[in-house]
Length: 401
Length: 142
Image (cartoon, rainbow over all chains, first blue to last red; front, side):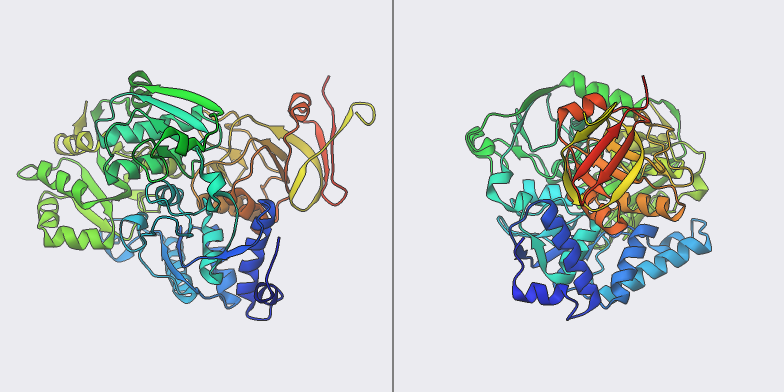
């Protein structure tokens, strides 16, 4: 892999050690993928996680003097000030959060604490080379916007933010952005929840690659794209997809596949979606809480919730995760008042997969996100997945059908 | 075959290492966050290796899966508790897997030889030497 004089100079430790460590890691990644050289990036998104491994690596390079050279947004940890009123935290959790925030500040990131950077603050243009971690974000930026990013790890994106470089390989190259798996969608994709189900059930049936969806007639909403990109990367590795006639690099089947034949063809029927739904949502009876917003909910979704809750009373806890900007907008729009009046909570800067749920251990919960259910299972939480509307109905009634 | 029940295979080196150990094989992709760091056992429901420890094993799996950050945390916690795998042999690499292998200093190689996957079984011994580019499987079962 070719390195120019400046890159060699940095790797040899002539600038600071942190930058050298970061460029060396990118160089190793570049060699693994047989990259020709490094290219410049002007923005990055880092999936900060406020976990031990994340903190260990970020601290290591911060101590070595690393500092962001380019604009870099970050994923959420949790809003301690807000949660400490409702949740029990141990000293270790509080210390970890404080350290994480301090270290990332020292590294010079933009503290957005948001998992949907592509909807606000970090929106790339078509063809732009970026470095995005957060698997749903990489997938969204590639597929929906036609920007160019590999499916970066939190650490490789951080290394790119520090150095302003990324190795030229994979999805940064036109030839690798062609689809190779044909996915015939033979189900009616009517709702945001249908896209959750499609994203949930597809990865276990396909090879590694770039799916090309046919049969989706109408332009999905941003929420549908967001759900699809997120769930495709729970049980799978899907850095990009195309939708014929819809996404920017797939105006025709020929363009989407680059004239090549697919290596695999699958159909997703209504029966497949129904079976996925059965697998993740089979429970009826009493529930104690509802957690929504993995990924962070949008303003239209919060509007739907407020509309359903107006004049009702909640029988369960209701936690709604969103961005700082969306919470502020919800406040300005009067949505926050409606939701808080009935006992619901809108939380900013936070991720569901954080140590927030001690007080709910052993209780029964609902979420709208298969990803949320999958990841919090490691925290001994079992969450049933239903549509957002069904979750709100259940929060009002205290039971789910 | 290079000796009695010993087989030599080609591979592509991603990260370096010189390792001998017992192998553990799965057809399922792995998310290293869904592992209990206290005992190295996979906790993902329905995974082929559910409740089986990957500690100290040369792990043979198609590739990783899951989001971009949690896997490093899983591997880091396993390493802290001395329950991490010895090396990875995969069919496909991802940026996440490569960066984790580089950062956590775990030898990672890619083997796409169909014969390798026909021959190798759990508890066989593997010898990986990335310097000499040698991957040897020594059969232990019948």
